[in-house]
Length: 245
Image (cartoon, rainbow, N blue to C red):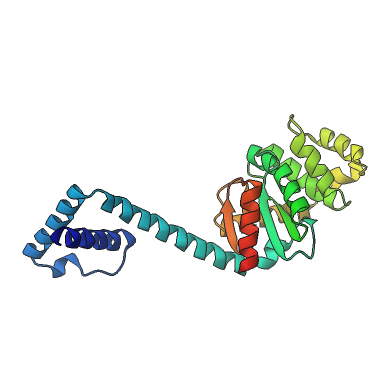
């Protein structure tokens, strides 16, 4: 009976201390009480180290919960900004998936066919692309090219071409690729320098920062923020969860 009580007390004390839950101040205990508490913890941890693992898992769970709640609140607050960018799939879809991505990010490139498969498997999905050029000058050039291509209805065609290209893009290679895709290359180069396009990218950067996005890809599905690349099954599971809410 004593061992169970010691384990229980140790688990509660550790969880409270690690999670920052309200507890009595140390100064409110006598020296004998503090010694007894420390003795209980030491004995319980010595006899059953799983107590510490459980307390750490409780800490991780609490941290993830707080992160999810903060992200959900931020997403709800910035919903209009999240939807204001190029769309693929069903514009009137019942679930919106937003991808923050960089054309030079290898994980984002790996996501391209996965997202294409998602749209084929889930015709009710609205997919919003958020250009987030965080990997240097080439990323910036390509993101500006994509937003310029959007003005001619060629965003998705240029996206696929640029994300499959091996060599870094230059203004000349972008012009050539734009014309290969049936776009006006010279107009696209001019539009790339439009301050409005630079402003859109700055807005995306600020939005990502506001959502605490630390890298690409990052997905917003329903009210959840999910960092990192995802497999098709994971995407569909997150979509089903969003539909169930």
